[in-house]
Figure: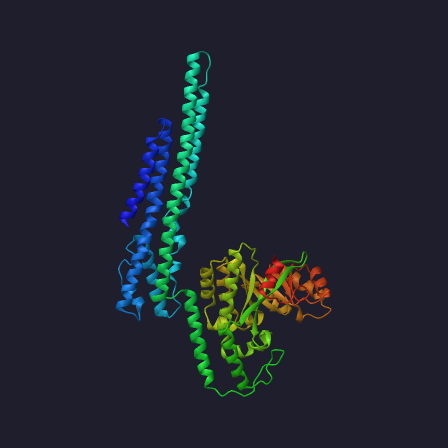
Amino acid sequence: MKKFIILLAVVYLTAVGLLFSMAPGILSMLILGAMTLLLVFGFIGGIMPSILYADAFRRSRKSIEEAMDVQSTEAWLAVFQIENLFGQKDLDAAFDDYKSIVQQQKESNDMLSDVEEYINEDFLSLRTWRGLIQQIPGSLTGLGILGTFIGLITGIGSIGFSTVDAALESISTLLAGIETAFYTSIAGVILSILFNIINYMIWNIMLREYEMFLDSYHKYVIPSSEEQAKRRLNTNVKEIIQRLDRIPKKSGFTLSRSGELIMDTEENDEALMQQVVNGLFNGEFTFYLQPAVELKTSRIVRAEALVRWKHEVLGVLTPSAFLPVLEKNGYITKLDAYTWDAICKTIRSWIDADQRPVPISVNISQMDIMAMDVVDFWGRMLRKYDIPPRFLELEIEQRIFEKNYDMICSTAGELRRMGFKVILDGFDGDYISVNMFKGLEADEVKLDLRYQPDNGKDSLGDLFGQAKKLGIEMSAEEIENTEQLSGLANADCRVGQGTYFYEPMSIEEFESIME
């Protein structure tokens, strides 16, 4: 590696030396000197560190292979015991931080962090002055153009024809200025091209070594986060299927065409559960989106995520076909976590594609709050997919607040402090419940119009007026007709959702509408 650095330095020195030897004057040498300083900075600050990082990744791969020879079953133990795996200060410091986190996660049986979260392209760009180094070719060209202008101005400014001698001297000075102009311009272009080629070549060599290091690390030491999640899901599925296989099944069981159970029996529940697990394993579960609109303009302002099962025989099934069974055996939390992860991944894809994401609201059940740390889960989702919390709105049903007010408010408060918008869902319009809003840890209340009488226009105005007095934003859901829309407009409701505007739709249909 040292020989390679010396070779590149020789190439630079040779190029600069040749250009210096052809410099037509002092001005040209000054401009070339400034270019040389830029090249030295680029070489020391960017190219040389990239070479050293590439060498460090190559050494780390060799160390991992040697660790595999020592201990193939628990290779991560052998790798984690290696002092200075990379032999490079910055990389080893980042890897030490990563090791301490992974060891804690091992003890608590959590999913292990990916080394790519600590050592990645952003990490490398920052430490090789990538943003600044990329400006050097343009700066070299700019210095060449500057020399061109100075040379021409110097030559033109000395023109004088008072005498023959003065005219001859002016022509000589003009030609010297033109020569300087052409020389600095060409020197700038040559050095710019040379630096660009070498810089990109070295950067890509380093990235190749980095990718090869990641492949070896994920293959022999700790799998990537996606692979870990897939393995955990496979393990959970296998365990459940093995447990269900020991339970007698009712022969001839099937689902109805509407997606409901034919008979509510324990045998049917167990058989349905096995189908659900198989469906989750095969990636049959997804989510649909139902847009919510600004009532005055019909502009889509957010969408609610609703889980769907794309059954291989019966087509798309609504939650009523499978949620009761999942809630009964507690597997609902795994389906929710699976769906929430998919939602975050979709939002990330919109951001990466430069599309305008609208907030997606998700439903959090009482079992989710009781059986899992939803605050920690959503924090990990934000870090994993690097998405702003404003793109996620978390809905908690009114009945859940009423059952365990203090605990739910505490959880909702933590989520709000993380930046999430918390919505109380399924409000039935009870005037007594309105008073509960005063100390409620929620940003918005969703009024469910299914609980409102058909002639409830006056009551809508009273409800929205009372909520406004308490400083609570209220929206409406389950809007199905123009009468309801008219009542909401009179009540000064801003946002609404329902089949009057949009049915729940696939992600592809939603993206098409947004376009």
